[in-house]
Length: 133
Image (cartoon, rainbow, N blue to C red):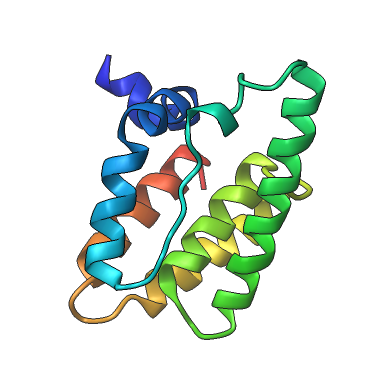
């Protein structure tokens, strides 16, 4: 149950977004004050006609996400480093590279502010442990 959800969130994310996208969109719009459009059920993976189209779409989305995380990393945002590390570790949207994954995990831990330092260190330690580093 919940262990699968934590370890493989991509398996459950499309159904979650299909159910909650409208509510999340409204909540984000109220919190942030800008128009944020989330994918709706008709644009989620699995709604297109072929699996190859889905794979290409997901790969391009992952590459775009990697680009934006790389841009955010320049501003020393710990979450960007953590997400980049995860993407390098698993080869999501970029070539799999364990040394770069470890580097970004370490940067995420070192950049965590006072408020989020403990949480960042715990997440990084779990990720590095999973990598057997």
